[in-house]
Length: 383
Image 1 (spheres, helix red, strand yellow):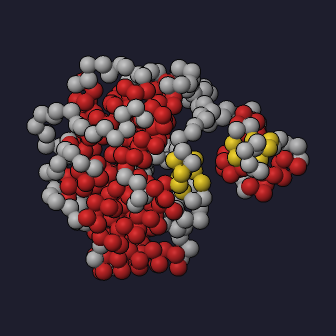
Image 2 (cartoon, helix red, strand yellow):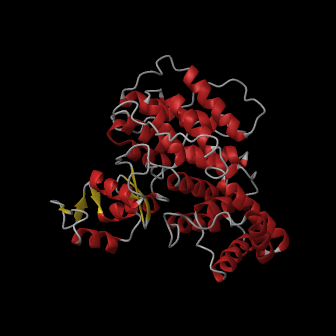
Image 3 (cartoon, rainbow, N blue to C red):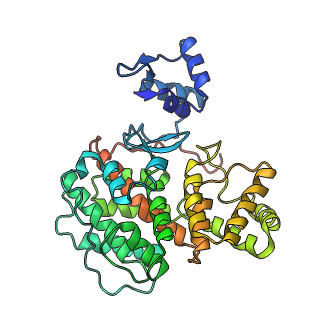
């Protein structure tokens, strides 16, 4: 069953319109026995959504995916009912990952996250190193086909630790994941404010419902691929500049703004890209709550001049009616202000999302195998 906000989101309407559908008999509402809220049947909502999209035309959705992992709400993603913006800053990434994994993570909760032994790290970029680490972690696991939830979670902990250990730079392989990752990114002992910002980013980006890369992981899980192979599917999808690499474009915008000023940089970006990276979000039309939280962390670690520049970029965009900034701008600002490579935001995003991918992988194992099957409509070359 869906609550009113989720039902309205799936239909692409406001909550008021949803209840207008109820009054017209197009949709039935059901009382929630545990509260005074109304609930809506998932299948009924999906049928109405398909009808609204054009009757008998093929639906774009591959399958209806019911999930208890993350709900997208006006206040940002909620992990198992807890807003991510409330978790960021007070709950470390490891605990948030265990929360996303539900009961599967409980037997060994609190156990150290240890990487598998890696050979000498090759000279390659961070994204390629993450894929390399996942391949090696899978190859080193003699029972990688063990799909029991507790075994999957153990693999996930090892995958996260191995991915961080494989990155360029020097840092410890023990201690909190955020501290390990911050040390690798900074190539040396990081400032406490930067570690706190990295941990907040990991929490805020740990999952975002059925993002494209998460769907790829669930499709792999539906074939009963092991977790390492499913994560490789996610890594291939997140590599696109329109997904995991979006913060890199925001980083470039800030570099240009630092060089020529906020106004000219925004104008030039609009001229060549047609839109501003790091602004607007299809879910958070009133503003991305994750941006606000991560911007606070950026400001705690940045210099006064860097804070002023980002504020000017945001103000100029707002003065011209550009949609509010999203988490990619905050992530780009964080890595830009620390003097890190432009693709660092992608690295942070990817490591964070390993937790959410594992949660969705575990959930998909409880579904019917091979349920994702797109419908093709044949069109001849002359059509």
